[in-house]
Image (cartoon, rainbow, N blue to C red):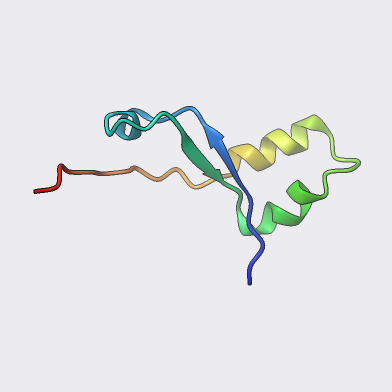
Length: 64
């Protein structure tokens, strides 16, 4: 089993177009331990972790 953490963020336009109002923020594997045990981390480090995320483009189509 792998550790993971998910948060939600403002929905990108292509996701909002499908009717969803939230989108996940995936924490990179190398940041999970720091995110889950943030004692002593400065706010700027936590913001860096949130900003170090994949930036996928979500494509969708109407089902037949």
